[in-house]
Amino acid sequence: MAENPLPAHPRRKRNSWLELRGEIPPSLYFAAGGSLIAFVFLLWWVVTGLELVSPIFLPSPEAVWKELVRQIREGILWQDLSTSVYRITVGWIISTLFAVPIGILMGNFRFFEGLLEPFIDLIRYMPAVAFVPLTILWAGVGDTQKFIILFIGTFFQEVLMIMDNVKTVPREMIQVSYTFGLTKWETLRKVILPAAMPGIWDTFRITLGWAWTYLVVAELVAANVGLGYRIMRAQRFLQTESIILGILVIGLLGLLTDYAFKWSYRRMFYWVEQK
Image (cartoon, rainbow, N blue to C red; front, side):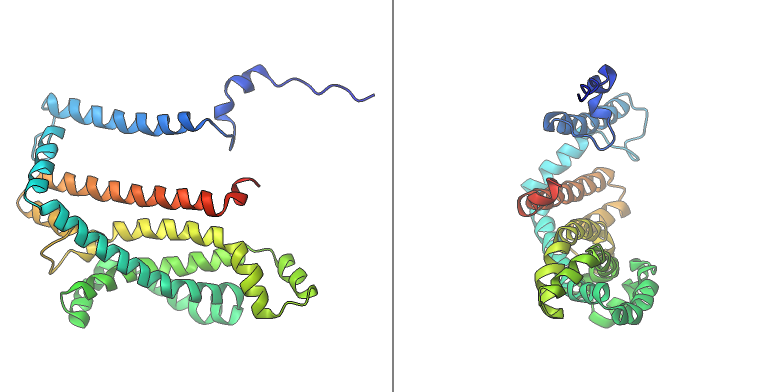
């Protein structure tokens, strides 16, 4: 006769939200993140309210709010926002259009991996900001130069991540597909790509976040509009409230795109979550 299973340890039950990779209620998940953000803003308000830091170094939340209202009223924020979103979107899409096929080739064929990986590894360690003078010489001072900087900052990391996503597909799946009579290219299209797509989609989310971090670099020189330009201009005139506002706006936009990708991931690849 089988013995009754041992009851769950009461301490483990009470602290189940601290289990390794354990699930927690969605309300607790969002409450934890929201409470930390609220704490940081409260600390900011207290520090500036007690004048523990000079406003030149850290303006108050009220000063940042007034700057936000001013930029909205004068149309500055919308102009900067729309321009930066356009540059980020185009730069990231160009990077992704090249990174996906090249990463798939490198992940499936050792020849292409050996051919391209040393060159890509060489370039990806070079700081994107160092290419700013060259890109101005190559492409002038228009949006094309910004796209190139965003491409340099994103593509070389993205292509290697997509290569690794493809390599996570078990070799056994490929061998089984051959036993069912699929050709090499049918296996790539019907087996490897669907299996690797959840990882590739997550790579899209991460690399789009990187693109946002390169925005200031892309708008560093020869720009007259954009969130990055506004931050650099404010730095020259010690307008710290404008700097913090620009940083917060970029962070908020990045957060929104990140959660949009997470939401679409759960809808498109729900079967991955249920493993």
